[in-house]
Length: 137
Image (cartoon, rainbow, N blue to C red; front, side, top):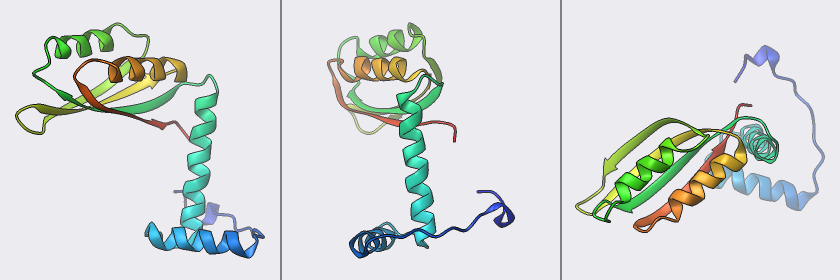
């Protein structure tokens, strides 16, 4: 976050039940203040809005798969190399004898990233797939 000199204070009026819910979230999520939670909520909404547009965004695709599944590793590599999405980085971890966890950091236009995430997630042997969306704020 920028210097406190750049921070502008403003007030917000809320009905009591919304303020109570806000305070419950501050407490349950371990935030130091209402302001921290509200800042995160605003950032989250900005990311959602960016994914509705046509700007370049980034995402992290997390997958768990059975590395014994025939030809799956090669299919994962082929998909990553044959897309218009930039694969910035991938990390591969062996969880146990059968399961691998892989994170793939992607950059491109939202529909392209969502398409590659769906294609990888739909492969036989992929047990879990989740795309975490992010963007420049």
